[in-house]
Length: 299
Length: 299
Image 1 (cartoon, rainbow over the protein chains, first blue to last red):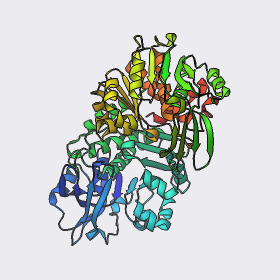
Image 2 (image 1 turned 45 degrees about the vertical axis):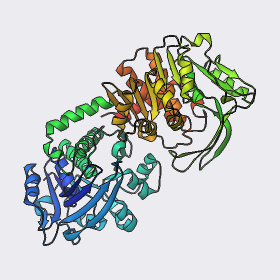
Image 3 (image 1 turned 90 degrees about the horizontal axis):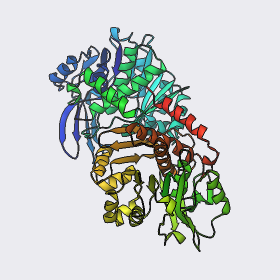
C-alpha cells in the first residue's frame, strides 16, 4: 500500500438551497481515498455499521481503493446531517450521530503498517497517537483536525504536532491554534509547534503552502456551480498526498504540484453531492483541468 | 499625459489597534497616481482646500505626478476618518467631511482631454458622465464605484457601464451590483451590463480578471505586517492602469501582467500608513517583488 488514510466513513444527509439528499456516501476517509486513487494505491482504516450499503463498497472498489482496513461493526454507520445557505462557505451541522464510530479504535492491518504515506483525517488526536504507534518508518505522515479537538484536546494535539510532518488545515483552524490573525504569521507559528510543512485550505480563496524556507500560494479553481462543498477539504488532502506519493520525493516542486492536484480534485468534488461528480471524473479529466488551472494563473 | 485620474485628494485620520495617525495624505487620486507613476506619466483631476500642506504637493511632484488638474478652492480639504480592528479587512468609517469636495465638478485641462488612459475613481457616477463628455477618444476608460452609489445612483451607474470599458471593483461591490453570490457568475453578469473587462479586488484573497473569453486569477502577495489597508484598492488600480499604459496594447497578456503589477504595488501600500511605505519604494523594488510573486505562484 502506498497510502493509508485513517478517518470516517459516513452516510451524510445534506441540504442546500436547491436540493436535499439523504444518507449519501460521505466521510473524510472516503473523499480522501477517492481523490488519492487518481495518483496512487490507497487503503482505508475506518469502521462502518451493518446498514452500510454494499453498492458503496463496490463503488470504492471500482477505483481500487483497498478496504482491508475497513471494519464492519454491529450498529449503524456514522451519520452527519448538515445544511448550506446561499453562501456555500457557510455550513451548519444539524446533527452528528457517531454510532459505530463512537468506539472506533484504529487498527492497521499488517500490510498497511509499512505504508510510505499516512493521512490522519480529522478524528480525536488521541487516536492519531494510537495510529502513529503502529507505523513502521513512513516517509510522510500528514494530518488534519478541527475546532472541536483544538478546544478540547489541545495537549494531545500538541503531542501529534511533534510527530506529524505535514498539517493540512483550514485557515480558521490555523488561526485558532496559533491565535494569529495574519495567515502567513499563523502558518509560521504552526511550523514552530512541530510540523515541517503546513498547507492552509482557504476554500474559494485558494490554498497556501508554507515550509521552513518557502511559500507557495494559489487561488481556487473557479467553479461556477458549487452544489455541495462537503468533502472538498478531504478530497483536496487526497489529491495532495496522492500526488506526493506518485512523485516519490518530498521536493519543493513536488509539493507545489501536489497542492495544485489537491485544488483540482476538490474543484470537481464540489460540483455535485457526495462522490456524484467525482465518480465520472477520469485521470484525463484531472490532467486536463490542471492544464486549465495553469493557464488561469499564468502571467 | 498618458493617464488621467479623476478622484479625491484627502487628508485622512486612521486608527488601527497599534497606532493612530491624523490628517495624513490620502484620497483615491493620490494613491492611484502614485502607483501609476512607476509605469507611466499621470495627472490628477481633483480639488484641495487652502489647508492642504505644501509638502504633500512637493511629494507628488517628486514622483512627477502632474497637478495641472488639481484645483485649490477656499475651504478645507476632503477629510476621511476611519478605524480598523484586529482584522485589517474590517473597516469602519467614523466620519466623512466632504468640504471642498462637495461642490467638485471635474474639469479637464485641455492637455488632459486627449489622454489615452482615464481612471474614474470612486465618485458620483453623474460626475463620471461629466468627465466622459470631456474626453477625446481615449484608448481605455476604467472606473471604480462603491456601495453608496450602487444603492443611490443605480440609473447613472448603469449609464456609465455603457461607456466604461473596464471596471475595477471589490468583490462585495460586484456581488451587490449583480445580486450573484458566486464571484465568477457575478463577474460575467457585470460584463453583460457593458464593461468588456472586470477586475475584482479581493484584498488578502487576491484578484480576478474576467474578460469575454478569458479568466485570470491570482492570490494576494503575502504581507506579514499589514499596517493600514487604506488606499490599497486605488494603488492596485494605479498599478494596473500604469502597467497597461506602459504596455500600450490591450492584449490579454498585458492585462495579466497589469493585474500582477497592481497586486504588487498594493502590497507595498498596506505596509505603512498613507504613502509612508510607497514613498521609499523604487521601480526596482517593484520589479523585484514581481519576481518574488512569480516564484510564489510558480508550479
